[in-house]
Image (cartoon, rainbow, N blue to C red):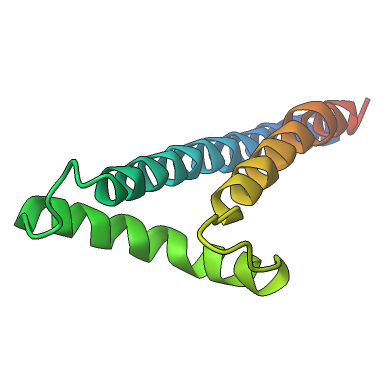
Length: 114
């Protein structure tokens, strides 16, 4: 029969695993936003051809991953003409959430059941 200490340890391990997965998902989305921004610059400066099927498929894939988040942010941000600050807002939000996970959530998990 499991004692309460074993149950707390198992819950702690599970919660740490969940926070690790969340941290890594945020990290992956960080790189998706960076890739999307770089590809948009390559389009804007005519370095890559959007008519290329591979470039087009990569661009559509990145657009499908980022545009729903960008759209919500663009509703709140003022229109600055040709400057889109929504990727920066997303990157700052990711940094903030990762900071919360590392410096507040993980220590709280470790302190449970002490």
